Image (cartoon, rainbow, N blue to C red; front, side, top):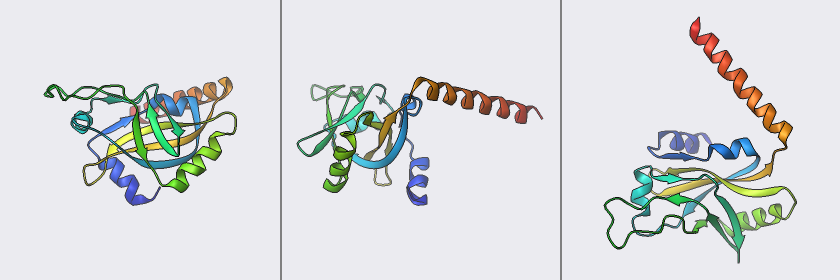
Amino acid sequence: MNKEAAEQRRRSGVRIRNKKASFEYFFVEEYTAGIVLTGTEIKSIRAGKASLADSYCYIANGEIWVKGMNISPYFYGSYANHEAKRERKLLLNKREIRRLEEACKAPGYTIVPTLVFLDKNGRAKMDIALARGKKLYDKRQSLKEKEDKRELDRVRKHY
């Protein structure tokens, strides 16, 4: 990821993260994909009413889809409001989709969404990662590192 892209994610008013993903998986490769949205979904995302908890991506017929992503119905929406947990198509190059498909055939690998943000043009984008599952001892190590970092920050703040 280049500096400009990182700055764009940081400045975005909307940052919907999948916090559980970094605890459950090691990220091997990361990609940025567009999301195909309908109706009032973009308004709900701009309001921050979306969740990536328990969502995952899969590839079918040369297309990549995200399943389990929850975008709450827009409060001011009418009869044309969207369905909250429908499957949504992601936009990637064919070459990237083929590379992900080949990598997912190996045991232990999956594709997980990590972040939803708005780009400078106001379009919703999603960061996805090719991920390998962590073992229990890896998770313990992550918790220990997190606890040590909190303790160090607390000590620095005190002095």
